[in-house]
Image 1 (spheres, one colour):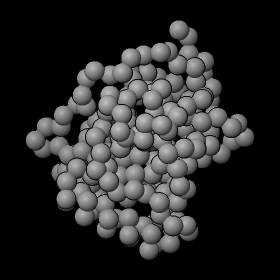
Image 2 (tube, rainbow, N blue to C red):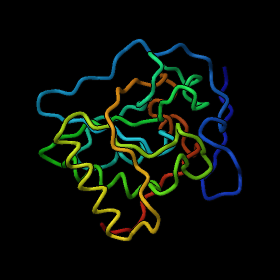
Image 3 (spheres, rainbow, N blue to C red):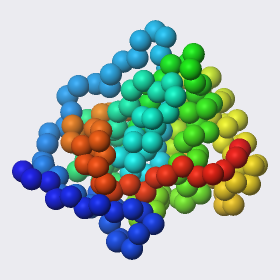
Image 4 (cartoon, rainbow, N blue to C red):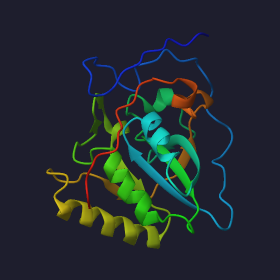
Length: 202
């Protein structure tokens, strides 16, 4: 099936969301689990609106080795995009970032996360509205939990974001999204994104 390309920037006038900007092929739920990191790699799982734009920005960050978009934090087993896009499954569109801790850190990954999305808009990111677009950090262990809380507190106290931070810090399984979502903006240059790096200091 041919994809209908619609190039939109969140700051523009078109009222499309990540779930509505493209006509997509119907594809079954992924059967492959998330790619496991090696012993000298670490993983961050983050949600902050449409995962296409987040992936494109994170892939270029120093120390990032791999990115994979998917769904996290819901109650439905083996969720599909059709399950997630309505918000009924409880999942958020999420990004799994595999990084080299000798070149970056979980803390730096989180600070960058708070630069590229608005953590003060509850269940919303630009034109994308719904719990599937919420801001969340899905921690894997107690160490990540402590770092996530510290970073979130520093971002809030910095005043760079004027509103209250709504970012959830929770545990949640990651489920890879369908193949057409992976590396989406690499496959569709000029495609929809509402993510950009802000000039803020935390």
